[in-house]
Amino acid sequence: MNRSLFLLALLALTLAGCKPQAPTAAPDPATPTPTPQATTPAAPATEVVPQTAEVPQLQVQTVDGAAYDLATHRGQWVVVNFWATWCAPCLQEMPELSALHAMRGNVEVLGLAYEDIELDEMQAFLKEHPVAYPIAIIDTYAPPKDFATPRGLPMTYLIAPDGKIAKQFLGPVNAHDIEQAISAAGGKAV
Image 1 (cartoon, rainbow, N blue to C red):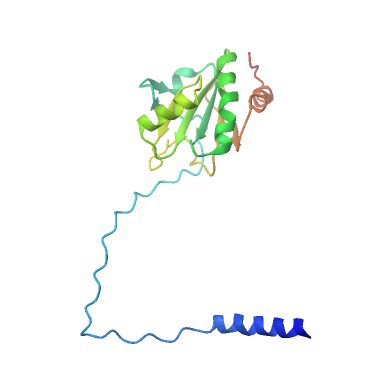
Image 2 (cartoon, rainbow, N blue to C red):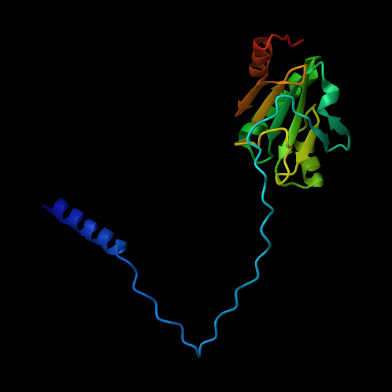
């Protein structure tokens, strides 16, 4: 019986919360209207790229000041990894991607930091989390036009020696995943 009364009381309270609000009184002309506070301008809209190009082009400047042009790396397997410093799975995969880059002669890794971060902050971060591969900061409001806008991070692309996308990964990857994808695409990671 007590349980029924409790449920009835809970139902009554719930229904009371669902009734429409009473109309508000018209403003008093003698009372000054508050001035809206200034707001910061909205961030520019990001153009969403729905699909990655079959043979993507990419030219970026790395955090160490070097120019990186994806087209000059034809003949090699290239791992393009979108990541961010605040992304825990991204940080977990960095050491393995770094080892893959350092130990495989025909596999290169390029890290694209997809976040709003200053160059000096990124350089300080990389002193704490060093990697063997180049890193570039990507403008989140103007991401690379030949790559689909990341739906989540990390987002990784394996690019074959002919420049075509061989595999796309959403979520963390490891060297074994990359090497399996290379084998599945008919290549050999050496």
